[in-house]
Image (cartoon, rainbow over all chains, first blue to last red; front, side, top):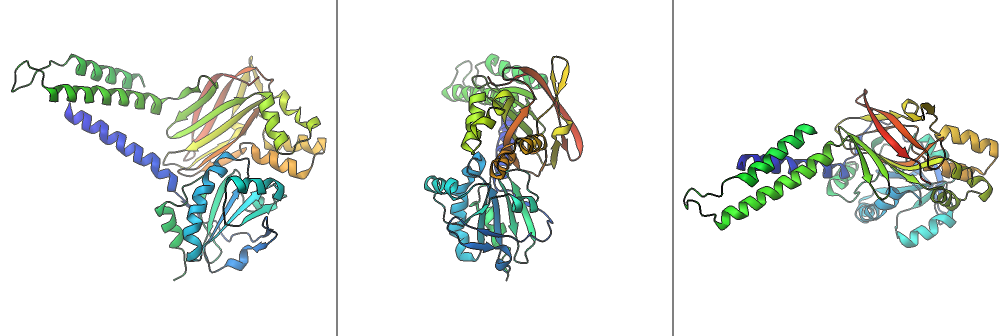
Length: 169
Length: 218
């Protein structure tokens, strides 16, 4: 009986750990060269992806009405606080909404990384995204190397480790 | 699942019926024995709950909200019906003109979530899913369908973009840990009841499921 209980406990523990592990899992992809873009942020600053070659870039596609997009924003902000000083850029590209829709969102979710606007969804289509949120990690050579569909705990040490490992030595 | 139920039933019975003996103290039930038995019962109950929920193929996720779900081999799908007022309010919030948003109030709308917690690459294509209503096949109104509708109606690009991304993707693939939310719309009226036959591919091997008697929000 004691062995059976031990077995059940082991199974439960391993399943719990297995389920939890998905929160910080990024999928390694050979996504080719990241499509370049020129997008304005909500403060009318222009961002051109190719300007950041030499640095890892996190490119997140999102919308204010998308529940998992909102849910991962605090973790993205916490990650940004650790990654900015390490030379990693984080760009969150809103799909289809303008400043008037995004600005109130920032009051509820105060984030400091750039919020860009893909008003006519041209960029998201070029990136082959099918659902929100989807996030890509672009390496310093401009290649898409990781992908995550759905939210993640972006400040999890394992995710930070993966991203920081991309920095050029 | 019935094997699980049977095994756990026997386990629970054996714990409850086990003689209250201690090899050193004869028939006296010691405090340690009592505590150990309580822990055994607690673990058996937790395991029963865990096993029933983990192995469920089809379930009613929330009786009050009338959500429906399907889960198999680490892939889960959950569909919650939205009332016409809920779905119309959502799209008015996305900038839909009032005269056009009434179209959405005439059809059957669910909020959907698809998750892959398996070790496999999972994909689906809504074109392979079937909706049966009173012995007839009914269309799933996907992104492409609505794109054509809004093109005819002539609404703004911004609104079309918002609508497109609000729906579950027509085709999607999920690596480990991936998931999506989005609306799932069927060509039925609010309040209609239908059966959904779905297919997901797990490492390119089809896995089929059926959710019966799903009710459109009303």
